[in-house]
Length: 89
Image (cartoon, rainbow, N blue to C red; front, side, top):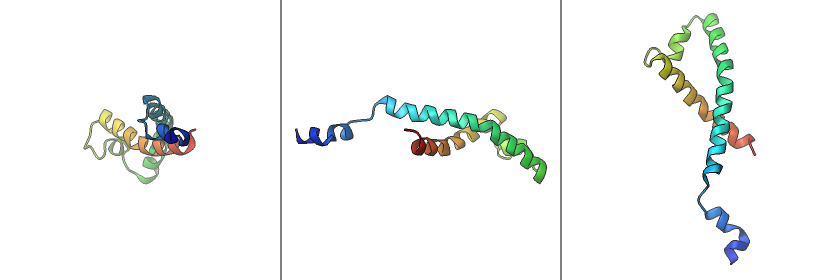
């Protein structure tokens, strides 16, 4: 009875799938929307500083094209999750 009055039943209960999936989906959307802008920055940086954008995308040839893009997207998901956690209601 006292735990219900304090709201401890909500705090101690396991989080529902909605409370986990919504921030992940929002972070994935934010990450995907930022991806083209970062690609344009990489193109300008490659032109200004003389490095190959392909080597940047594939981590120096360590990964293939698709794996490199997926890895950059996964790396970008971390700050997008932080942004989502701080800014989304």
